[in-house]
Length: 160
Image (cartoon, rainbow, N blue to C red):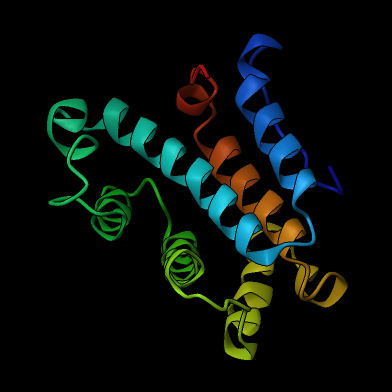
């Protein structure tokens, strides 16, 4: 897992992470696929956190993507203090990259996006942006690992 330390509560509850890493490894050289797969798991994790932390999470927020798109869910979690400002900004930028990956016929990460992703690495590991720049698979692993580790009690209970 290339330097990513992932905490787990039990072997059974690490199935979600196992699934994520298997899918990510299978497409490691395909940026569009990496972005879409990583964001699918990010959305799964964020929805689980909202379901757990919000009174109307399951009934209203996570079941209604039209009124509560991911941008709104990110803002809600940031306002609640569940996502710190830096992680919120990284996830919001990554959300925009995901939208391009899903909707543009020709997709590649721009120089400006690489800069954002590389700068985001330091949120997870100090000086990481100098050690592993322009490595999207590594970035995705660190991003998922951060959400997982910071919300272990909730996301480790997800069953596939």
